[in-house]
Length: 314
Image 1: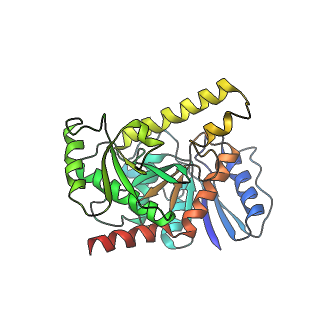
Image 2: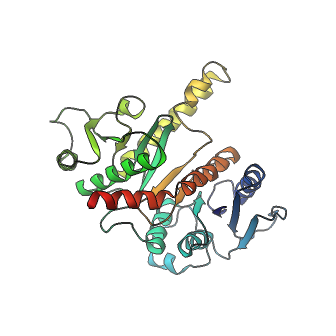
Image 3: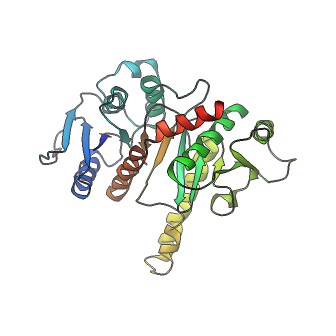
């Protein structure tokens, strides 16, 4: 059985989306059990009883705009804290949340720990899955020195190896592929990656490399990655609305962005499996985020990445 800890309180559309997503997943997948963490509110209809669904009421909830302060670590009765704590205690195999990204990362580091000292956790987004192509980091870290970018490259490469049969080829996102271009940090990271035997580093990547070419792990700092992802999502939505329901055009656009299956981003670098879905997720996206969580739990992704990095150190 795959045990999913589902934080129901983070999404913009409220806990109803998580409730409906859980019910849909349980109907489709008999090998899944879900523990749903929620905060009771007036007018909230709870899902019907199910043998593989457990409801845990929490008195506190972390809001989308809350800052990361020390008091957050003492708020043990929030749905996000409880779900990650279940993962820490071994009661769950994966956490799925649509909640506050910064708080999720901070609590994951606090409750789960990192897989290697000085290796910063990062958010990985699959741009598409066949062949697998990833962008890392998406916003877990904003101010990134060169050593941190090298860590992202290692995490991204280990992710690709764990979830596919493909060879990870790393590219460092830059304003051009010429050696003279880029900031001091980018140039330093480039030099560090060139000197490593693993992962396989192919040099600088431009924006066009996000969707085509040999580089299947694109590395950048979290601010750039988040901006790139949101711009790509916004452009896709604009074009799909522009072309309406054209049966010939819409499927082509959808190949550039996983709208359902494996929706969201995966936090790697901590001792546990976590999926962060978009706060605006609707029901299909919620289902996709849970399915993504099931995939990484089935692969025991956190352990696979830790094992790969340990092998490289040896």
